[in-house]
Length: 118
Ligand SMILES: [Zn+2]
Image 1 (cartoon, rainbow, N blue to C red):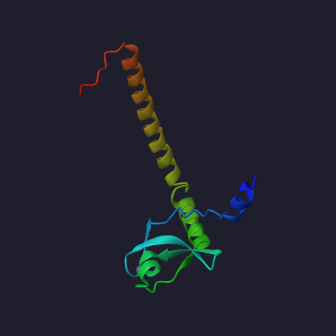
Image 2 (cartoon, rainbow, N blue to C red; image 1 turned 180 degrees about the horizontal axis):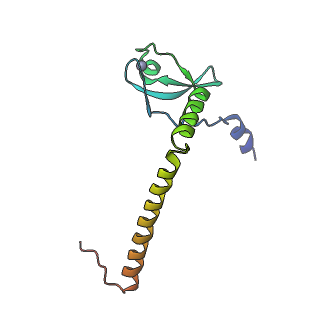
Image 3 (tube, helix red, strand yellow; image 1 turned 90 degrees about the vertical axis):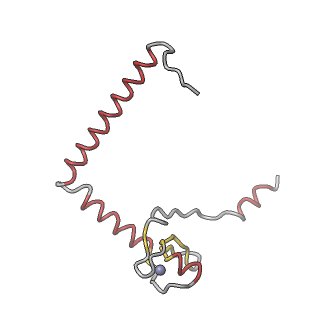
């Protein structure tokens, strides 16, 4: 079969931009999207600049943004102050889920009483 040769030729590395569309350009307010520059460097770039060249905000290296987000997460989410609050919230959510599941169990054990009205 000659299929394998074609598949190799069409191979393109998939890049994931987790923050694409979540950030806002500080110059024009447009969304910031992930972009590939010169076929190898990954950047976050103002969408307005990317599409219409209507903004002159600088591109930001993807790795730099990633590191910034990780640093902020470490400081805000995993700090000694924030962690107990996070655990408390998680426990509350967990309790809620358990009680919801118990209610579902009860209603399903009670036969086919639950009926959906159209
Ligand atoms: Zn912009």
